[in-house]
Amino acid sequence: MYFPTLLISLLPLASSLPLESRQFLPTGQTVKQDVINIHNAVLALDATVQAFQGSPLPTSLVDGTPVLLGVAEIHRVNRAGLRHAVAALPFSVEDSRQVVDAVVSTVNVSIPNATKNLKAKADAFKEGGLTLVVIASLNLLLYDHDTFSAATLLKTNPRIGEAKTKEGADAVANIHNVIVDAILFYGGSLV
Image 1: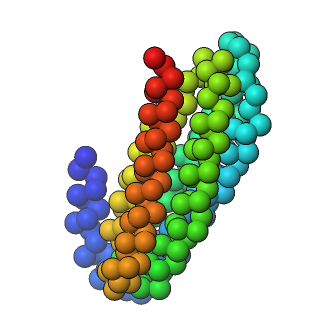
Image 2: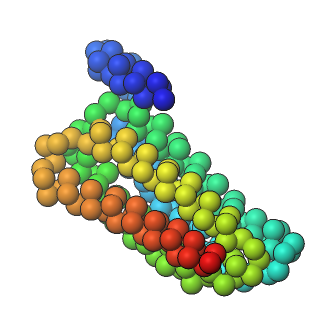
């Protein structure tokens, strides 16, 4: 809980570092690549989910392992992105634009598609007794999304303009909403 406060208090020190020292800090380009890495991990998980056919317990525990590994990979690359966003100095205007464009053109497309495909597989996950695992995984990924997005938003340059800022915020809200929708969808199947 005190860690973010510590990092924020170190920002003035980081910005006063000589240029040679700053080149080791992550930049907006690093965070843009993190967004692309998340997108690629989502695409891989989506393909795994679409291939999942379901099976009864206990076989489903083995058959569902690739899905859990896909969730773990998204979590891993997301946390790397969070670390980069927190450690980065404020982004340049151009980096800020590119980060927003990357979010809009990648994860704002792949995550809604993946949640739609995940909902289509509800019966397969239910057959294997994995509904609660899906809900827990979605909650983890929602937390990851919300924290990485918040850290990234803090680093974007306000000089990108209101329209670009709104475009990014709308994409972030859309992703949040489709994940929440999938959680509610799977939660509704428990009753």
